[in-house]
Image (tube, rainbow, N blue to C red):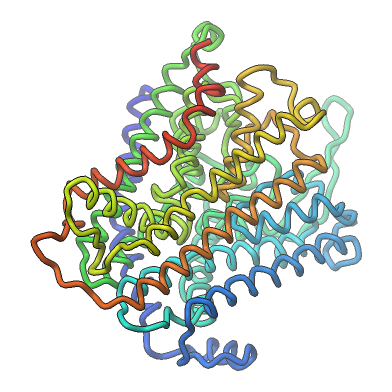
Length: 554
């Protein structure tokens, strides 16, 4: 079977599975988040936290709770990394240096999972499980909670309450992420991923040398890293390592996992607003953008453009032979169009346009379908801007789901859209002019070196975590600035999202009239996609023209 046909079949099966998941998982999440009764284990947690599960919060209180749990997580994870050597199951690993510990703690708390280290030579089992894997659950749950708060803003009227963050966090973790990640881990073990606590063991090679191997609780971390769109690998090779991705089937299952929740949440949104067609419109826009980027990357990689690749007859540099070109390209786009960042191949070795597709997937704001929660609230922000633009163009009232889009709402949406590109472009520009920053980090001259730096900060600012492997970013500059970029680009947009939820919840619903722009049909889907493309193009095209586009035309 040719590469092109393999790609078509793989995508067709994936789309079919996701279509089923859209209904089943989307309805399941809706039922869990709207259930009246608390589970017994949840009541114990609320009692320990001193939380009244029946009391709802105003948007400032909800936001403070989001920031409080994230700040506490940051401090605890930083402490674990700095004290690793003295902990149980440390495997003798030394304490992580302050700059790297800062970057890693921020990375996992923000759902970025950017890794300036090799997991098998840096982290012991306790830090991997009790630190990194725990944050994989919490950071994903925080993202979904913020999305649900925004949906409540559209649903509710004449109130200052947007829900109870502690209830949302607990239910998402206990009822959604934990049980489904457990099932996914069992499947991964059945497919060949390892799950053990073996110590480091050394083998003697046929050439007379030695090589050390590390086992570990890999499958359990692999499950939540994909299902929670986290992406941080137990090993440096990430899912390309045979212990994490033991086969092409396991890699395909990983792609399904990382897309499952982001594509299911629009169904939850439709159920919550009482109009499933609203969910269909959102998921249709997400799917079209994803499939377009997927087709572009697969075409670029299978065409293997360039003199060297054409001479070789393949674009297999940096690819894992077990997975081949089509699955590697599908994985690359799916992991960057969500906030996952896991890899099965080296993105630095992709063709210029193939790597550019992965970069553009992040630059769209990761809304197609985006990360767990962040994709949904990102697309809803774009929807707010889209209906406002439609109102300006045709003179209709800018309304969305019965709520007027007025000055306050559009200001908050605009601030949300501007935060991430401002953070990443400023950091990338500073890295280019700081003496020694580029020279230390990359040996690639010209457009490709720029692409490596641009990709890195695009990945960090969009809380993705994947990288062009040619960038040596384990330096004080990239550890510190990268941590700051990840913090700003994760939590400042959340401030605007929760504030928007509060603003919408206080409004009185506006009845649908002849001047209301419809947001359930194909026209709105086209407008939504157009808004995503226009915002991304206006923001990033100059930088892309100097990087991957210039390299492709060279």
